[in-house]
Image 1 (tube, rainbow, N blue to C red):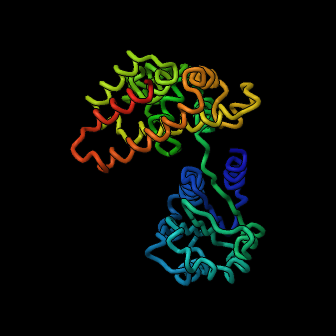
Image 2 (image 1 turned 135 degrees about the vertical axis):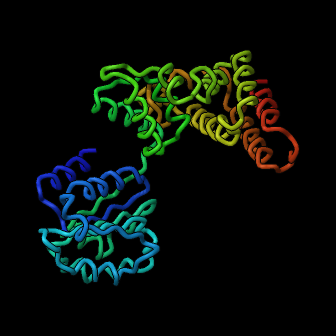
Length: 334
């Protein structure tokens, strides 16, 4: 976050670089920086002749260099943005001669998403020295809740831990999707509000009582009645609660629980660090460990793999998804 703020502040103050190479698994920050450059470096009347956007699959490195060497028209700078630059991975090294001697009046931006280049390569060393090299790393799931809270705090909001976790369970770690949903909340909620599960349910459509977060908790505590209620709800709303996601989340939970059983230090701080979870949720693992000894956890992981195969039509081509889930949960808790 600090690195992104630094880059944006430098651009805002007019201290731009000739090349921005934005790469990494998390596309959100790559888009954030490139969009800021696209929207703020040139005045509207300058953009017509001096701002160009290309896509990696439609342009070659030679074409990019040719455009970059041109001089701007009636402006101090020209901006060239290459989106989906990862499509140029086979020829990206051909950029080296230009990177060694870039056109000072050109701002060349590469959006190299979902992958990275080796920083030891000469090209990236040169860009890091002469321009801006930024790697956008994917957040771990336990970091996403903190990101949500920090993002909202910057906008004048707070969020309850459970509400943040509901978003992560429903949307995963895709920051772009999460940011879109947060923007919807901000539109309807007054500044200063503490966002709670009810706000999430009413405005985003995630049930505060019947979701994977609540299912995981109920399974861990062996609340059989509640587990059955959630399973029935999932069966009646399969599109909103895909079985493959439920199995994946339960598999992550029991895999972490297996790790928990193997820990010598079961203090909250150490458990949170090793399992990569918010220490707030350590109590759930402590409770589940009492209900599911290590041998049972290993059996459950095997059951989850079997259910995953059935959900994909292997050995149960005509079995409804809801029935697969109910059978799985019965076996897990008995």
